[in-house]
Image (cartoon, rainbow, N blue to C red; front, side, top):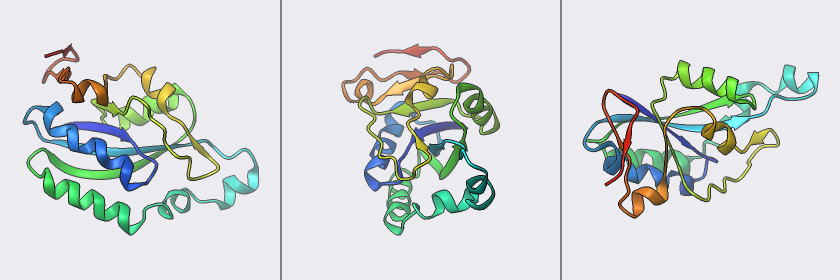
Length: 160
């Protein structure tokens, strides 16, 4: 089963990209990992007292969770699970370790990825994602019918 990473800013609007997964995965079930990146705090007090769970748990609102459940129930045949994972770091090496640990196979992003930065340590992940070496599918490619088909045993992308 493939793991698809989608950047999020913890708003229900950022979940709309998940609705395109059935078209991209072509009948194959997958896990969706909603991803948010945080920079490491620069002072010792924040490192000691901020607590990793506290940073993002306040942003997991009931509206966000309800939308995740609604989308998962709508696409139950294509999506096995939806989970939220955060990365703490701001470079490609840290992301590659994150991607390897979470077995990320594919990244889906919107063209004009304009994520809100809900926390002072939130970072915009696009440059890190593009340099990761993991296949990236842009939402506009899906919408205009140029869906990149993710082959089962290879990383080749094919356009319709």
